[in-house]
Structures are given as C-alpha cells and as structure tokens.
Image 1 (tube, rainbow, N blue to C red):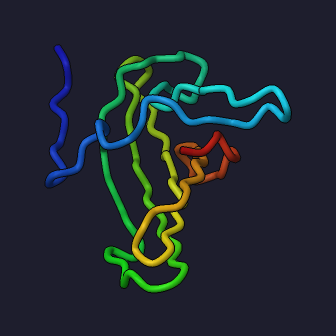
Image 2: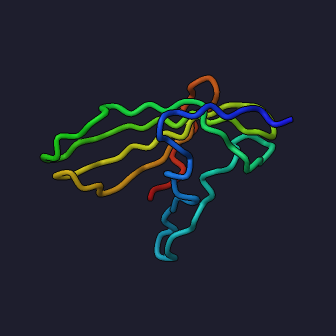
Image 3: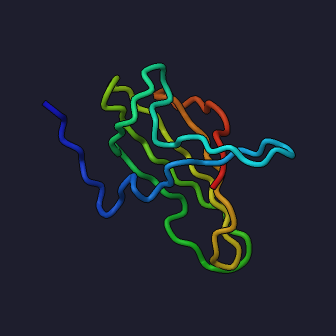
Length: 115
C-alpha cells in the first residue's frame, strides 16, 4: 500500500525541472536527472515532504538571492534528502538557479547542476 503524500499548499515537485545541466567545457552541456533518489537505490518516485523558501518574497530591485529547500522522500528506499535551489534574481527576473543536494542529516553533498 502506497503511503499518503502530504500536500503542501500549492507546491508540487512538478515545479522543478526534470533535469539540471552541467557544463562539459567546450563539449557543451550534459543533462543530469533531478528527480531521482540520491542514494544507491536510484528510485525515481519522489514525494514532497517539506518546502521552505528564504526570503518568501522578493522586492524586484537589484540582485536578490533566494534559497528554496525541497525536502523529498524516496518511495523506493524511504530515505529523505533535500534539493536546495539557490536562485538569483536581478530586478525581479530569475537569471539562474544552482542546485545542490543535501542528505538526510543536512550534509551538503555538493553542486549537482544548474537550470
């Protein structure tokens, strides 16, 4: 029996892209799947556990960094991890997003890619 997924307001993992991209020098960019378990099980069914955004709103003036933490649970192995999106806005428009992964203890596993 599948566990019930807690709905977090209007937030959904569908808001995240399926892939992030990493530069390969002069060979272009490579897509890396974002919605996969970061642990050895390689499960691809994730459910959203918690969402946090700091700050919650932007002013729309100058450079504004925003951090979004998407805590997810793998349905295959049951472990949780966090997808951390570091977003930069300039004058209210998103210019880039760097994605890091954090394990269930909050240890930063490093940069995964950008979108």
